[in-house]
Length: 53
Image (cartoon, rainbow, N blue to C red):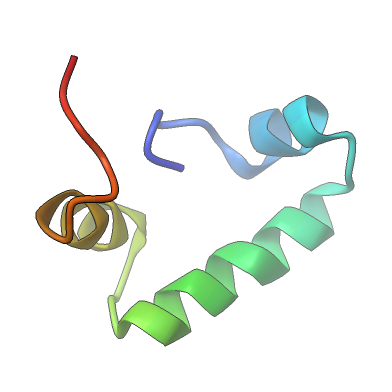
């Protein structure tokens, strides 16, 4: 998600179905209390989970 990949792209990388990725993305949004992917990535960055190169 942080790399800007679509659910289909993430699914291919992980070897799972797009519906599985969609479920996990929804769970991340719910757990973080964020409204969308961009907001979740910002929250992860601010929490120190992501670093710029």
